[in-house]
Image (cartoon, rainbow, N blue to C red):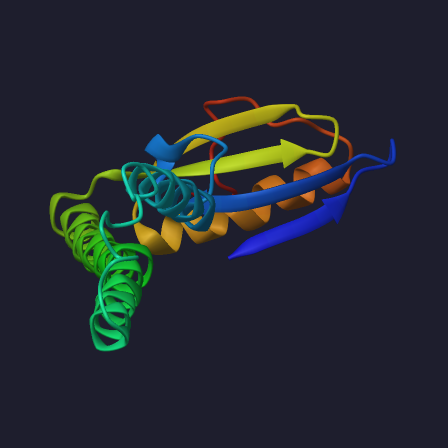
Length: 157
């Protein structure tokens, strides 16, 4: 739930509840893209052509080429795909457990307001409903040109 508003000074503000506050400014999909690229770069080392293929007959060359293509597909497609799937499943499991932990143990949600010029403000609010109300209140204040303090109370609470 991200709300984008424009303040009286022309700056655009995005107010949202951070689901993964430890990632900083990096998104979950950006992190996955970076991990896939690093895995793919690691698997490209050490692939050379087999020795002695020129002296074999045509059937031997075909078998070696088929095995080489299978090996290349395994290294470049199957293994990275399995790593991405396992990484995604672990990420989803951790996100679910984190959501359950926040609800059960009433850990505070991190609310963030980020402007178009790079300015960021964060608040910690316990409770899903209360943090949603706080997001709306922060967006209203930013639209009016007021940067809320870090100990901002919600109207009516």
